[in-house]
Length: 446
Image (cartoon, rainbow, N blue to C red; front, side, top):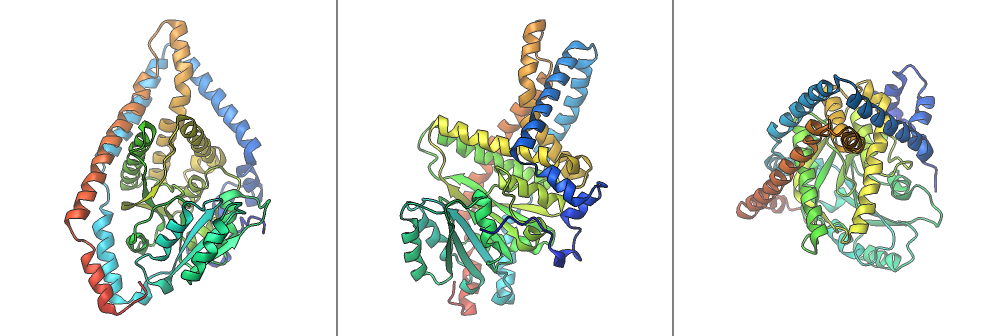
């Protein structure tokens, strides 16, 4: 396998300032800063330990000084103000915009539609890969503008045989097998075949994804906005009815979709979620591809896209389905990995975030969610310990209340929006005009 490339794309300098130029703005060489930012697991854990030490030190100090309560109260006012802005924001109505844009594009010329490459990294996925490949290859999108790539990461089951059979059926299906010992995980697999793909838009799916037949058709028009570097599709849990844990994950996905919509509406940082992510090739090349040195490549790419002045859009419907884990142990391990990857991005890019390279709106949004998702949960432990020692109420209660109230509002609002959208799609044939346009064009490759 070729080594991971983190080089800049010289052909893109005339459009936007490259991510490495941002590094140079910090008065150090891009090479030295890259080594500092991508320091690997050891460097991150040192920084994480330092961050945790500082959190405990600040909380203990606030308990011991007379003015600690007023500091907490002032910071709580700011955080509650941001929470209020999030709740009051009006989400962008992308569904009707998408439908209108598709119809306009089809009326103009099918040849104007961008090429799309759909990528899946699979390892021992014989049980689900056939279903996904068929769904991707049969997308309601011109077949000469669509290609599907499956990277078999040295599977030991019948995945290669299933793919070989499917390749005979679908000419625009491409498969490649990685050798044993190939590094980089999912990111390495995606980077390995990126240069071979032809799409203007690159989409990534998990092997267990469930994909609607018109998904690509719904997403593509969102890239008409020049600043859109990527679009994330709402994720849904297909086996949500299995048990308590899967039902909780369904609610969690509704909460995530709520936060995505509200943050984007405020000009904040939309985020990628791995499964169901669509990325503009130009943006992906400028950011150096997928980071092979991180646990969560989607969150890492999110930060780099925003640092390079791209926006990330979000599509509520149709959703991309995935299997939720069914046991508490599996859920615990999965969320631990996500959490570790989530705070890694702040450890990796803290200099650029602190220097406001993304702009004030995105910086404030990113930092506020860093506080809500990571700093306050970590601070709750020393806060409780000091409260018990001193016989007082937890000092950070006005702050930690934000981490309870805001998610509750998000879950109920997110579930209601999803339900309302499903009713709208069921009762209103919004795709009928698109189908008529396709049929009238005489194109039989859909």
